[in-house]
Image 1: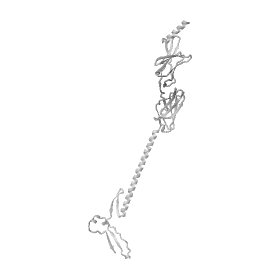
Image 2: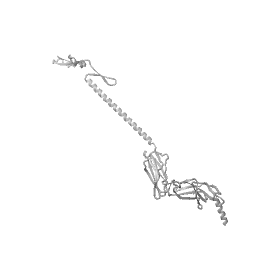
Image 3: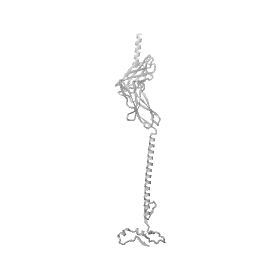
Image 4: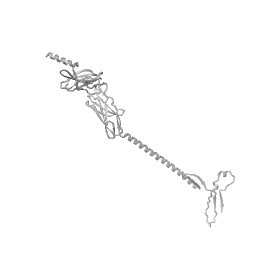
Length: 339
């Protein structure tokens, strides 16, 4: 019995040093628990390696260097490895599945690597929209989803609008929720713009605020076209008003000119002057009549009263007045007769 135990131990030892390994098992999956993108220093990290049953043990590697081996409990097909995140643990991790047979060990190829990142601040949240284009019309709803590493104590997500850091919405969650969706009612063009999110959570009695996510842009359909339409209508209205002003000024000027010409014509006619009108309705020349205008008073035939009358010589009136003042001769402007 003792001899048999020694022989069996030698066989297993021979297998463990890699002499009889057959790599025919399916590749395992390796996962992080919790699945944080960034672990804070001092947090507990758990690696879980899942294999196809039956399973004897799992081997864990850090940057392809052997770390440790975990035996699988009977009837289970996975093992786990936990440690504290700290400086120097930012490495790539893999695992393998082992199954012990009578004469050899069956093994799998390494799993896909899992990266562990340790920092003093939280990971950057991810953000996306529905619809993806971010283009919606007035009255429609747009959904903005934000995802972050909320710790077991819970936390709060914040949605910011614009570059001034103004909080548009906030949403508190428990430790089991790492994703929230904000609903934006597109009421007018003011709803358009850039949006981003952050989250706040607690660990070891301290509050941590994540960095900002990338920006997403919401566009209200037709807002730009309406703006151009309003600008065009405003310009058209301005042009129409300007035309009315110009037309009114022209009519006022024309009316004043016509009134002035009519006044001049009336004054000339009252003075016995004939005014020549041109084709453009202007009056550019005045001609005095050369014929004398006789003004006689009608006297009844049987009236023997003495009548004094005067005859005006209009020809003499239009002569050069300068000659009248320089010559000593007298000119007769009126003849006074008695009858």
